[in-house]
Image (cartoon, rainbow, N blue to C red; front, side, top):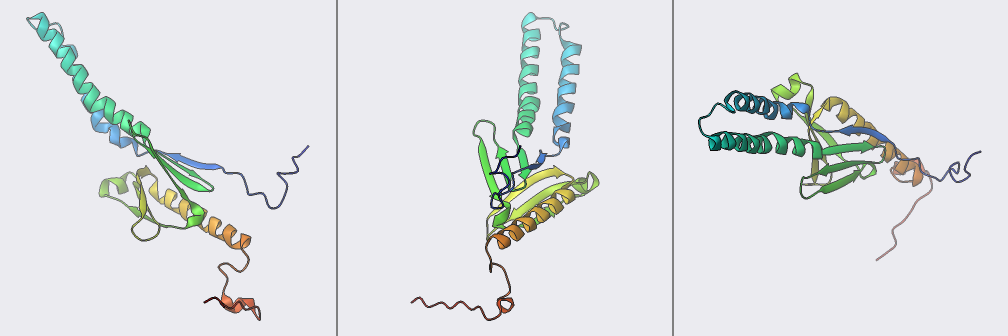
Length: 187
């Protein structure tokens, strides 16, 4: 049994998640190297210092270094998300203050990719979406940036094509209208 509302021709297609992205995982390389180093140094020197307060200070210092140089970068990396759906792009970021931005594909935008030599080597890059003058959004250091760029261009083209079909005469060549003319008569 089908729902009559879902089969109507005027109902827009359901929004589908195309991709969920985070920045490239290599951003966690140095923090993880610091974590292993701190754990190794702490394990080697813990208990071997002459005074008990020195052992306590060593453990407290190790905990502070791990919190600042491993845990905060990890949480920062985990809280930056990009979700691409068939209708829009959703940017979510922030640790203490969450920011959510959305960009509709139907609004239209230019897509460009910027890469450093290391990003080219690892096939990642920063995808920049430019819409209307100085307004832009960046998907920073996403994996497989070229594929993301192609998908965004295709989704934007589909949205514009659907918008053109929904509004007859919108986006068509004026010479293709034939004898149908619209005159601006307002003052």
